Amino acid sequence: MTAPIGYLDLLARARAQADLRFTYGRDPLQFGELWLPQGEGPHPVVVLIHGGCWRADLPGLELMDYAAADLRAAGKAVWNIEYRRIGHAGGGYPGTFQDVAQGLDHLKTLAVPHHLDLDRVVVSGHSAGGHLAVWALARPRLARTSPLHAAEPLKLRGVVSLAGIIDLEAYHADGPDACGGPGTIDALVGAPTRAGDVYADTSPPRLLPIGARQVIVSGDLDPIVPSRFGQAYGAAAAKGGDPTTVIDLPASGHFELIDPTAAAWPPIRAQFDALLD
Image 1 (spheres, rainbow, N blue to C red):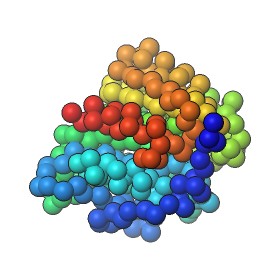
Image 2 (image 1 turned 90 degrees about the horizontal axis):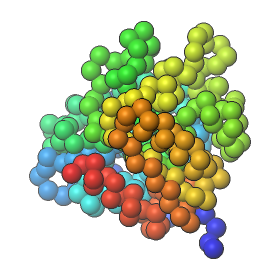
Image 3 (image 1 turned 120 degrees about the vertical axis):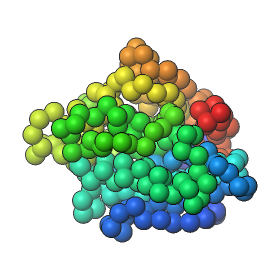
Image 4 (image 1 turned 60 degrees about the vertical axis):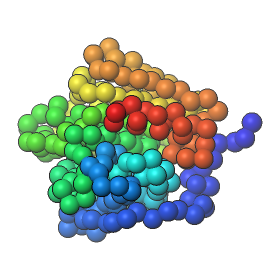
């Protein structure tokens, strides 16, 4: 059996380019890249959020370029967002979360000039970005007292989480050390310096039921986010009443889930089609 690929294998390949880049804030890392399909539109939209353990020392939105190019060729607009991470000034809590929220909501500004259909928007993320994607779907559930609350967040049809570290508490307690161990989760949520329950507005299981469709995808050979984490979160979401699909892809590691040349990709792309239909 062929060994799973790593992110360096993926990034060694030639990458297509986005059509446009826009800033959604004043920080140099508050930007996104828009990939536009052929045709007049209005275009359905997939928002992509890259992974990298929420850390500044790992690659950024370029990890999602391969998936973005494939989705663009399939007739979807793609908004691939960058954000401040742990190690960046302003990264962690609340900045990382606020950037993702602000980046998503910037689609309201881009919609008319670029013929985007805001009635057909789904969000997807990989690894740490899978957590942020599910969190973004759950934004309407945030308490008004949270610094992360927004009055009118962008409406999303659903989420496709790809090897997402969705349950921060579970990963803190029992996850592999691939992302830096519990200290990375602590840095993301602001522990131990932040008062109160640091998971209440950061970890999606605390926000269930979300009230929207969720697709939770894992690879059975993933050493970074073993599929048991996706299975456990998916079961909790379904028990809460959310329409949830849990998919474990055979012979797939962590990065195969964002590799359009991998056998894992066609069933993933089919989930985007189903959510946007």
